[in-house]
Image 1 (tube, rainbow, N blue to C red):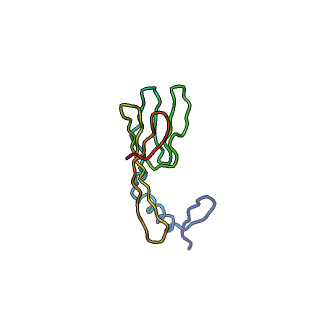
Image 2: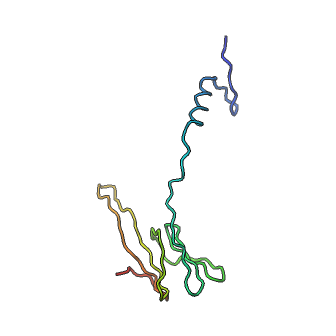
Length: 120
């Protein structure tokens, strides 16, 4: 006597195996995404909006033009001072695979006229 089978996507799987798959899929706890998005969307006096995607810092002008204003920074938070300078941190994991695991922590500043420098 043969055991009943369940057809899935053209494959004939024995019932015990199908039940095991269903139990594993339904029994696994659902997890939240493990991302860590940037925060601190800011707007300057001229109406430009700045935000981070954890790779670059972007600006959207009042006219709707989008451009990268600070390249290659792992920034989570942004801030603007009273003069219009934009600040953020660059917290990046550096490893060559040779056991030298370390992080780079620095604060950068985008001067209100457009030049980017490391803040002191």
